[in-house]
Length: 132
Image 1: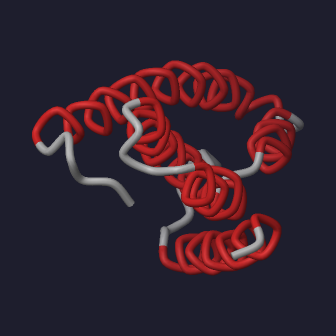
Image 2 (image 1 turned 180 degrees about the vertical axis):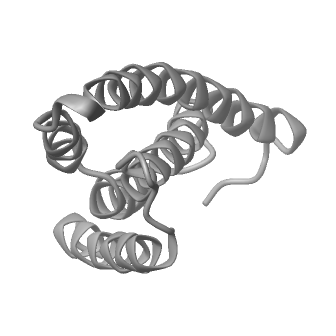
């Protein structure tokens, strides 16, 4: 199947998951954008798994394009991350919440990508002959 079509389909799936997440996560009293945070952290973890699977040759470039570029791209966007922070920090009483959101998102994002990568790589070691 054409890579562009795989990215398109994956992006649609990721965007649908994102919208479902946005409408199901409650708004926080301190304006912390929990919905965007969960979307970004979930996508980071899943991207780590996909990267681990790709590196260990459990999946090919087509599945990488579908999941990493498509699904994760539709689920998580940097522009929403930054916009959420700007929206919080325009109110002085929520400045600290915005700073915590930015730092927490970056730090936790790195951590979950790392663990996702380890998990994706480990799956290959358990079954080295399996490929998607």
